[in-house]
Length: 367
Image (cartoon, rainbow, N blue to C red):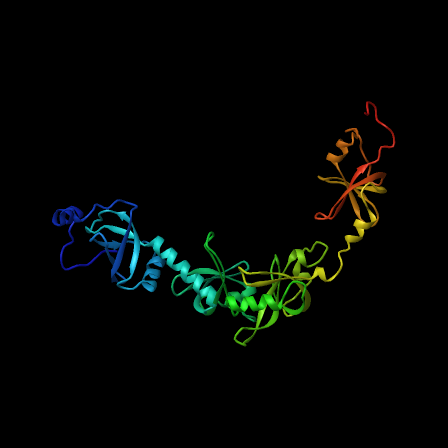
């Protein structure tokens, strides 16, 4: 990118000689304030508060496009000096940091207002689409946020209307949605209507590896009838481990769930299906109190220890507990062998009964 001028540009040395002590020498990496005086596809120029005209050098076409879309002649900006003097005589600066902050503020505004924007579908990826806005914003449109009855592969190259669903400044992540975005006021209304413990009926609108999205009816603060998505995380589908959600659900399926919370960042309601029923593991807590003597059959040896079949549930003899109770390290078990043990504790998170073996006779040197 080169500057055009009817008069040859003066070097910094010539400018300093002409202006005397009014101009302070610039340093690489220094931040300078200035005003945009030229904005074109060929050149972007600014006049610094130090009295020097500068040229903006940006190698990335996307960044130059953003500057053209977001800046105006006469606007105050903060630049970083790249070269105190470039080949054409002007100091060269970058507006990358200034533009990053300006774009972030614009993205926050768009998310807060729920304003729609036009984007072009760039490519398909696992789980969704990569899209780019007319101003150069690049983000991800998940399958769960796509309009229904659309095939991802048929959308590449097309323009669609989306809003910003999620922002993460640290990871520079933008998640778009074709569905109507909620304003802050609408989300407050939504969270108030769908309080924790409320039972809901909805329709499966998306299935992912981490859970299912359920479409719920909602009337916005302005009286608009719409639908919002609630998420049932895979851990909240069933009390037992679920391998593949596609085996249990399909798009358009009606489901019942209960609200367990809300996510202000993504403006989403969190749901659970499994909590509609009592946890069957609760019966284990009642049937196997601590210090209870139990008898079972050796089932298998795992990295955690010996698994014992107790009939209603499996128990685990943890190696560390066996050593603590001075069980000889030479003790072995055959699969199917009858084992007597004592309940040490219940691990509710791992849903296991923790056991330690009962000594039928004291080993040699036992103390």
